[in-house]
Amino acid sequence: MASSMRSLFSDHNRYVESFRRFLNSSTEHQCMQEFMDKKLPGIIARIGDRKSEIKILSIGGGAGEIDLQILSKVQIQHPGIHINNEVVEPSAEQIAKYKELVAKTSNLENIKFAWHKETSSEYQNRIMEKKEFQKWDFIHMIQMLYYVKDIPATLKFFHSLLATNAKMLIILVSGISGWNKLWKKYGSRLPQDDLCQYVTSSDLTQMLDKLGIKYECYDLLSTMDISDCFIDGNENGELLCDFLTETCNFNTTAPPDLKAEIMKDLQESEFSVKKEGKVLFNNSLSFIVVEA
Image (cartoon, rainbow, N blue to C red; front, side, top):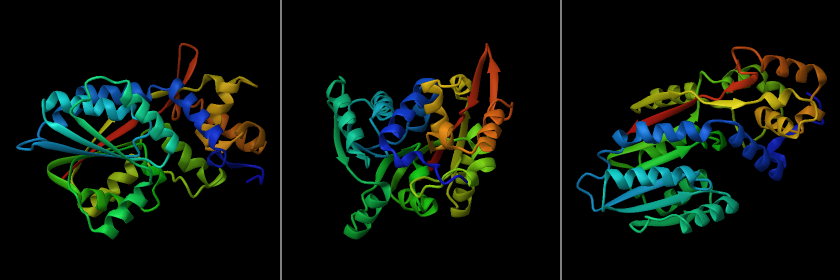
């Protein structure tokens, strides 16, 4: 690996911008919205049974867009019940955006919000030290398990916090996605980073099986338009390449042979489909619903 290649996470601003470009170029949030509309109501139907308050824990809640969609579904399913929504999120920037979103969103009167600026591991350690094992009716971890060092221990801990009839929702890339193939084939030749690990739903379901935890897994198709990646000097394409490879300035720092191989593979049918002149990368997501 060329010494000039470095992890995208080493440049916070570039990471944030490449992630923004990814969301703009993909159907990620639309895919999540489809799940929230079609599947979530049935999943959360009983979490509020015989309860005066529903306790929800958001791990890695980000800027809150998906959290508020989840909360609106809970309100519809359990009208009039008070909701206590606690958010664990390490980024002060994201928490500020979340609070802004809450401030300008109506119909949140029966929801109490609390934010904890910490990682899931820091939250776990704090709870273990205080021995305050509060039970939750719904816990969700959306696209965040990549940033956890010991995933089985994390799953076991949060599963232990589920109340009667509670559910835990985990969203991450599917084992059938292009990400899985990209990471398996090229992961060892790209910059490794302690902050992030390559994990898909295939890995996660194996971990849950070993732990003896019951779950259901739903796969939904999502795509990411990577056509700009094949246009020399295209800024959007360069940022998307960085996001795909988790490499800062991939196009200018990657060894030519590695770059050529990846760019060729990204156009192959196991990674992407070509449709109406566009190259659409397989960004399929898995929605794993864990039982208490």
